[in-house]
Length: 226
Length: 226
DNA sequence: TCTGTTTTTTACATATTTTTAACAAAGATA
DNA sequence: TATCTTTGTTAAAAATATGTAAAAAACAGA
Image 1 (cartoon, rainbow over the protein chains, first blue to last red):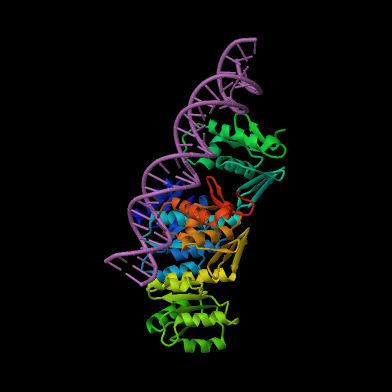
Image 2: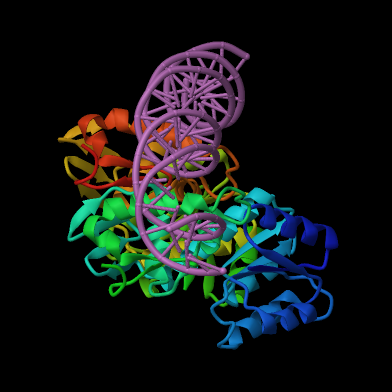
């Protein structure tokens, strides 16, 4: 979820629309008050924060975000009007992760958001998953079973990643489709089954660790299967 | 402490003022002589160096800075008046860490300074990358395969540099575009593929070390490919 | 300006992956 | 047991990603 705090309704709607169209989830806010309120319900992955806002300005909001330990690590991209460069400079000092200046292209915005998310994720997400005799190196995009490398296709890799990430919890086909294929996927849920099959096959004995939970979905863990 | 060597008094004062206002410490110099004198008293963390200067020009000063072991590792950002001075700075093994061309915004300057400081502080980049029979001399901007020199274009060189720097990790096309082309680039991601092709071709046998990870991106390492 | 070089775009062939669909097998339910 | 539902399996069809070549565009230098 991405929050966009921007008083100009046109820009705000364009941004929210674009982000949603790109597969991200976005919500817009016209001022700091409504944004702060929403923050209590749901924590966004990233905040787009305009500097010029009615009431409390963006720099103050940024400062408050960075002061609270709850919201401290939410990445923030500052949005500034051109010509007002001085503001941006201060924004960078206050702990913003990046900035864009108006007028900005939607493409640029999207790639900046992706870049910031990538940078901040790196510090959060593990670089490696290990389960039984399976080892996944996420950075290098490699999978080993008993130290023998495996060649997985993109979907197989992502499927295994989710199963290993949420080990021991059952993942429904819908959940997997949503996380890997994205919201807009309209195909059959059976697609998942087919990929599970090839994945099991490629994993060999280790494939038994992928357990079918009938009527629900799939689950992975050392003690399952076999 | 940041030193700014710039003959235009207006620009110099604006820069010094902005940097001081941003929490950095800055001093300005109108020519090379006074700058060199100040250098004996205090070593700056970074130098902003205009190319066009009365008396000794910026490139000569840069050369002298890089010749002395005392001042060798001070990062330098060159300030150029024209776009075509770019090559003088980057191409000719001058050792500048970055450059900005006039007219530049104060915000851009500040973020470049921060970027350079971040780079030089943290990952003091190697001067040379070696992988298999490929050797890249970053300073001299030269590439050798089995000690035979190779002529690479700018983009090819940067592409190879990233691949060798982040060896074994898969770099997505988006990531490469962002790191080499910059955020503003709005072109096709296929552009990367084309450069990968020419790079592989020029590398000959060694080109096999660039592996395609389908659905993800490219990766380089001794054990890949072949 | 012109000229040669680099970079990007475009188009198409090819290889690979992904999805669909059909049927078999296994569980569940009555 | 008979029937219905869910999952496993397979193969073919569809979709997609990448390699490649060549044209077009952008760029740099004279």
